Length: 61
Image (tube, rainbow, N blue to C red; front, top):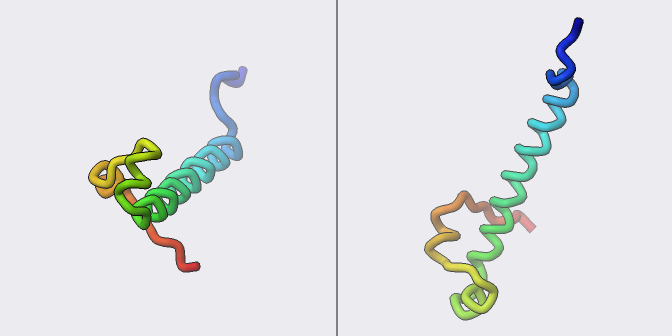
C-alpha cells in the first residue's frame, strides 16, 4: 500500500522549481529596490542595510 502523504516525483520537482524561481524573483526585487533613494525606501517601509544583507541581482534590461 502506497503512503498517501508522500509527494510524487513530479510534484516534488514542481515544488523545487517554484521555490528556486521565487528566490530568483526576490533577488531581482531586492536589486531593484536598492536602486531607489533612501527617502523612498523609508516611505515604503524598507531599510537599505536590510536589503543589502539579502541576496540581490540587477536586471539586465
